[in-house]
Image 1 (cartoon, rainbow, N blue to C red):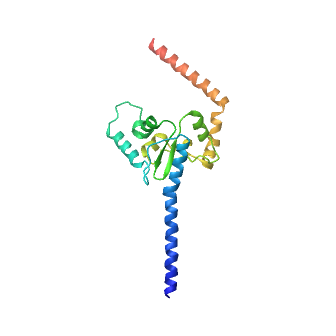
Image 2 (spheres, rainbow, N blue to C red):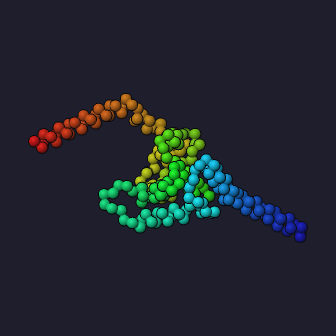
Image 3 (cartoon, rainbow, N blue to C red):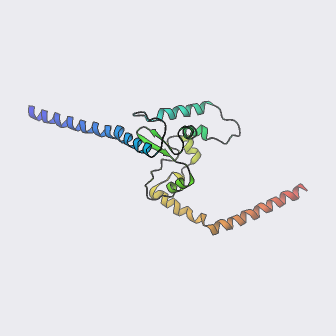
Amino acid sequence: MGTLAAVLLLAGLLAALAYVLRVAHSLLWVPYRLERRFRRQGIRGPPRRLLVGNGSDWVALLAAAKSTPLPSFHHAVIDRVAPHYRVWPAQYGWPFVFWLGPRPRLVISGPEVAKAVLTDSTGAFNKATTGGTNPQARQLIGEGLVGLSGETWAHHRRVIAPAFNMERVKVRKRFLSSKRNRKLAILLVNKS
């Protein structure tokens, strides 16, 4: 009976050790390795804290942005909704990386790179959920094609593709310009 308890205890300890090693690997080693790869490629960002990443810095930036009131009729809301997109590129340049816990967020800029990411249907680029965890950013951006990936993205892209056919765009352009010209004519007649 004593040997059975010892074997069970040893099995439990080995299982606990395996779990601790797996957690340490995913929380410590993988982020460290990714951070080294980003730095080798010249991609910098705010210094990462061990378990929380840049979450506390991000929350502090968001709180500071919300503490100041927005002026009336002001449409530049990105400083309020996602201030890290204004502050961190000024410090670290484009592209930059920040960490939410052990997971990196690579922020890109430039039309070529954005086009490559947004039109990729292979799933190689894991686009974060639109707006991330910030509900104000989610309301600003919406739940559209930009935040989708994989089969859902491909389906939505197929559905909207005919609307952007050049022949249809030209027809709409002629229609809209003729409507605009009629409205201008009506306004000019009413003024005189």
